[in-house]
Length: 128
Image 1 (cartoon, rainbow, N blue to C red):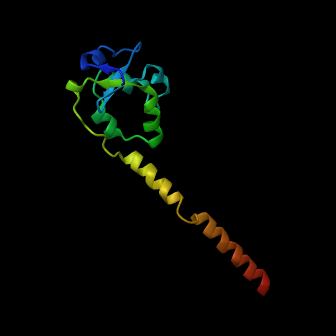
Image 2 (image 1 turned 180 degrees about the vertical axis):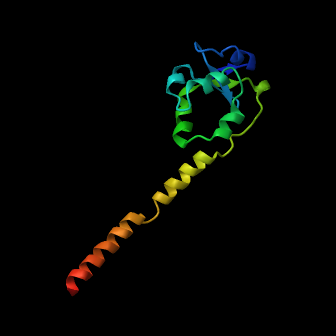
């Protein structure tokens, strides 16, 4: 069982020394990630001590970012304070999945163009 936090406990950790927030009833301590966050540390500090679920979903995050979050999860809200909200599908994570699916389908356009150019070169040299 993971550690249980109240919203008031999370609210008290909103400084550079300890930055925690809530995303979908899970509690994350991102203190050591402040300097590494691609969007800058300010955005994490602005959400310190708060429920950042809606803003997190609205921005959109890659599947790599969602995987990285697991490292910073320190617990969950106590049952009585949970909202039961589910993560929204974000444009970035959907885009990443679509891009991976397209990359894994058939030959790339570059290969087709290269093959066509090679065939044209062979025909040119054979008939001249």
